[in-house]
Length: 130
Image (cartoon, rainbow, N blue to C red; front, top):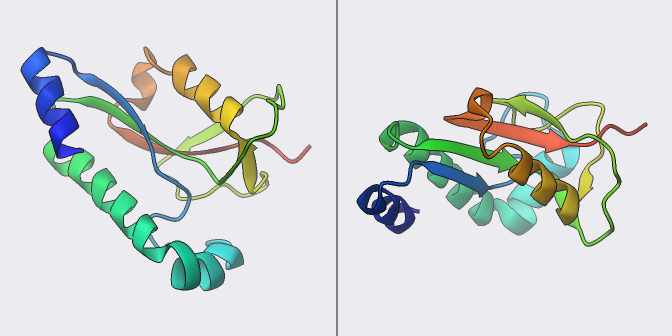
């Protein structure tokens, strides 16, 4: 990420949209699957590295209008057509699905390119269960 930000600064580009995942930081009330299975047994190092990227952007990149999108598990399914729900500063979303199609996430990321309300933010995303 440091190389990307360096190139952006050199080129005068100040908008960045990146993706991490739910659960990059341990939080109270996080889903059982993240806390007891995924983090300790499978993707703990990956989540830690994603958390470091988020920290770097938050602390050292205030000149960059970044948005880090935190989806749950990604699928290769077609778009659901549902509105992607996003909450700033959250690690996960209650009352939402624990999987989302890559297409839905990509559409959300394109939709927020010029959305200043999510500048300098990490947002958890998903779609509602209903």
